[in-house]
Image (tube, rainbow, N blue to C red; front, side):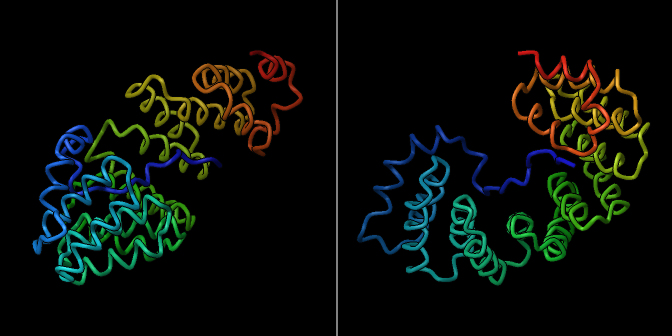
Length: 270
């Protein structure tokens, strides 16, 4: 069962400033982080500026200069970890996040980002522990509840997954991707009526929502309702004409549709 394409994003503690703002501030930050400077803060902020504009390797170099001056700068360790994670070097990211947490175990954003990296490494039980720590610090972080649910779902602990998703949606009722994932989990549990309701609620929030339409198609296919399945797939293909057209031909949940004339006609349409 294909899950919503992730929202296992990493949280940047400086992301409240836009990339444009960072670009504008870049020369000033770089001047402040001059080679003779013994102050780690300009190097750290320059690292976040580079990270925000996509210059990950340069960001790591800047964080390294900050950490050379101040090995106990948790903010720099966190930034370096983010840069490694954005380079998909999750083991290196974990080392940095752990260093940051050893300096400040009450930083909920680091716990969240560590959990995200652990999810990427498929270390789901460890990820859940990290998200639990993040949630203990910031109970209303819907992203932490959602990514905790993703870890639980990967372990096929579906009842607990739904409980975590309920918390995410309670905090952010318009969290469409949590509603989509809730629908997928409910379909796994054969709670088809509730699954459809969750997908429909997601579509109410975001109309251009191929994952929700595809989820509805899946539930109808599992129930043997070919006409409604094909109708939902038609909506899916209009919004995302390539990805789901491939998936539907190999996903076993849609096997009952494959020989049906209306499904074959839909596949032939441009």
